[in-house]
Length: 469
Image (tube, rainbow, N blue to C red; front, side, top):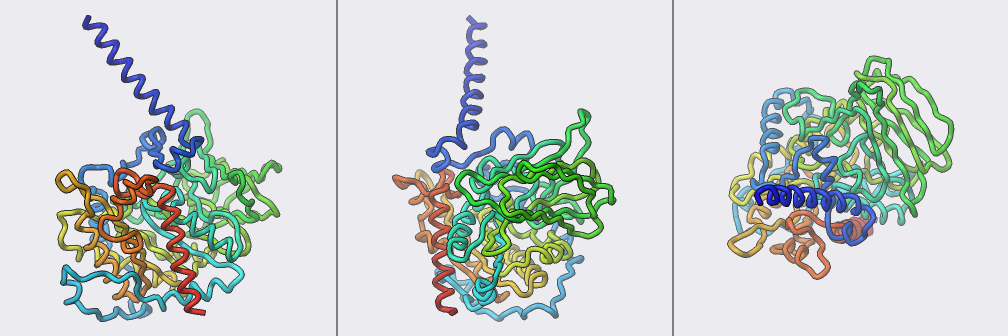
């Protein structure tokens, strides 16, 4: 009898694992799953030793956020931002911000979007959109990009890293990779000192595989999408001995030696129609690799620079030389900073630490990209269980007010996503709707909700462009 119970237990365990594997396999092929759920990447997530999304853990603020904050404190003495070259810090009404009943407006400082609106008149316009898990898998940005490209031209998805745990979740590019990649990020490696974090706060190196396998990455245009005509491959410093093999579509392989003497280096590949780009690292164990930009020579490009678990506070760890190095090739007209969900904690009353950190972040970008507009996206609503009822987390408004304060102090534009969603209780309404717009973690949008937010953001920008013109 006991043996039968043990066998039954093993059978149920194997059945559960089988179901998980089946759902993982079916996710990309079943519209219902894609529209209503986010892919957890159950297999690759744990094999790559990535951290569990903090929104699914018990503590609303996970320890990695405090690691990011501790690192900032340790690095503050090395801050190279030249304050004399930056816009002055604006005076604000501190008394207003101490009033708990004060309502954050829908927008602020919209005149500071001027550079972006003028940029839309150019041959090529670029939006660098940094964020956390709210935009991972190209959520929100894919909609904003599609609408802008329909209006102003352009194809491609912009910057994509060599390695991404959301590759199977993303719809706008078919991204595959394999081999002995080593992955680093400001979240996973918050205590790593002076690391060469790239544009999306990540970088990769290549390890040695005993079986002789090579690290590789491949990017393919999804069915129904337009081909690219330009691919930029970005990498950092090395020992001058790195070699790669590149294949465009089904053309003969190109064997290249990398010139890796600069902080940020690039190779450019152009063709009238590129629908697949493959790159293999043949040697280069001391070289840093960032990713590729899949794009067109003209029109608008929106780069999704998402990093799961990122509070935004450690963005200053993307060094000035690296940001300026990328600026040589990817000059932005608009920088979007979409963070905040990872610092929401119902019991946290004082967010002055977050204000100081994010002020430094904005000043960092103002220093590295002096000619770009900067837009802070106010945090979305987030559900919180109060007794038997789901309500808005009380710290949503505190974080939102802090972001608004940072925008006013630093002189950058602000858009209130919380208000655009409907304000108090909106995340619960979105998640519990007949056709849900958010997941049941009451934190993250699903594809349908992200599409709606992307359209709202596009409409907001275009309405302000009309006023500007």
